[in-house]
Amino acid sequence: MPEQRLAAGHRAVLLAKLPYDIKKDIALITTVVRVPEVLAVHPSLPVSSFAELIAYAKANPGKVNFGSAGAGSITHLAGELLKAEAKIDLVHVPYKGAAPAVTDLVGGQVQMGIFDVPVLLSHIRAGKLKALAITSGKRAPALPDVATTTETGYPNVNSDNWYGLVMPSSTPTDIQKRVHAAAVAALKSAAVAEQFAKVGGLASPSTPQEYAAFVAAEQAKWGKIIQAIGFKEATQ
Image (cartoon, rainbow, N blue to C red; front, side, top):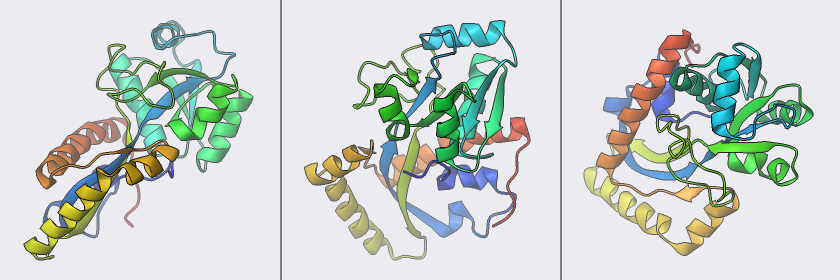
């Protein structure tokens, strides 16, 4: 799953100006897949749990840094969300993509990172990184023993990387309904669930109404963070 991509809900508040109106021009069909992210640290950081990380960061403001796939990426905003919710001072180190950020995290050049579970899984299993929390409402099947941020008292620190199905709003309603029915049927199939599982994804079918409510909540959450850090991406 591409780490630097943002879903439509994020981009609507990230870009200075969009070439379309998400509320008028796009029909939300269904959410498709969620990819849980994991907060991991380099073993040199003297913490062994999420609570210890928060305590350490509070005792050492500005001395813990985190790498991301780039300014404005979900991996960046996830760190900013953690900072805001836990009221801690972390230093952001942006990279040009997830690969170099993870390389430096494993090498100890940066101390912390929040990335898709599949991106860090092999390093965690090899003991090169310590997984402290899944930044999601549910535990990740690949890391069943790692508690979620919800379980550790920070339910708002949720940075699932997600993808959804949309169509032009001008598409006839009957076609939208047929596409939705077909998509949901596929997402509920064992074959699709198995393929998503191979890349750490969780099939997430929904109604258009549930999708709209989810996007609205995502826009509100990330919009607040983006405005707080004063970040704006150029018009595309």
